[in-house]
Length: 113
Length: 115
Image (cartoon, each protein chain N blue to C red):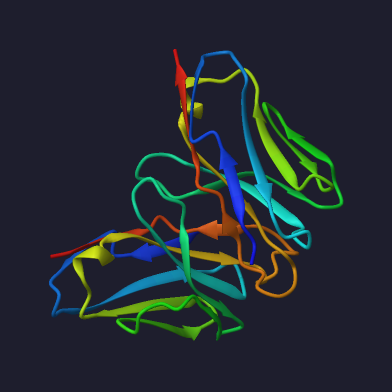
């Protein structure tokens, strides 16, 4: 089955700096890669996603890149703000077979004001 | 309506109790999910329903019993739980199980404590 590894487990940056979180996946058939943000005591919320026919996607300060050959994808947050502090989860899924999302272990991002 | 709702928000139960968690969505989604989340861990898939049929059971103990009465509702019946079952239980839904048509939305969760 699919295995998703996520690094780092914790990340502390100064306000205004950039943050990068990386994930690798094992199943070459995976074709959907969402990123979720979960604030303390809240539900996971989708912040950006990418499908395997696209190499990069951007939404304001957030971007995701996908390298299908290397089987890794990354989340980039620029100009970080204190409200970006949360736990971020990457995930991967296929459109056939098991289909359900497999989550990475999470990254706790702390943005220091 | 672009929201998944869950009740109750909090639940405390003894090991001999029977209780149910409820989840509802009115987005016309055909796939619904139950996840269990422990502190500082990712959501862990328990069950997937697609078109009201159970499609995935991740070897969940029988003390957890899911039910999908219709396309908008998902229940999780709890019986004879153990203290280690204490966790945040998240419901989610998506247009289709294969996520081709859109994202998976999570509900706010039920914080369950088993005494």
